[in-house]
Length: 190
Image (cartoon, rainbow, N blue to C red):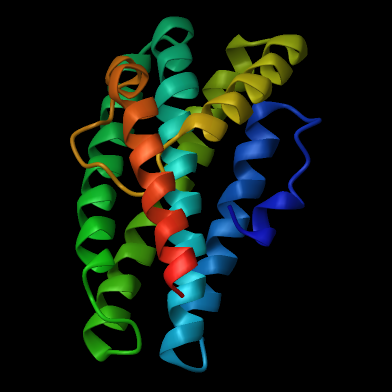
């Protein structure tokens, strides 16, 4: 993960933790779009892609299932978020194949940025407040610990079609291993 997310404190409740990650993601979008050259843009995009993939996987594994179980109407809230996450994973996977420093890359990234920011806003206004209503402070902190654990084993690239907690637990570790090996090989070739 990038330096941007290492400053996020894990000693807080899950809503504050995920909201801080949303802010870091916003900064990474700006950093990527404002990069001075293609190489810098690629480095920023790699950090953004990793953070998005890891963040969404952790939410799918730990947060969304808790909302389904604890929140009245949680299924509808989560289903809407999962549909948005799927669309973002598809777009992110397509952007991975575009060349940094091109107008096509920037245009696609701007569209993804708009979708991701709208998704984050919906989480922060529709999902997170409901979670805070249903869980006490101790449960919210324990959920942060679960999210941090899930992020450690999450894939670093988007995997459209893998949006449920159960599927993430089943295929996520294997996908993560492949992604992290691919990242290491790319880093050693640079």
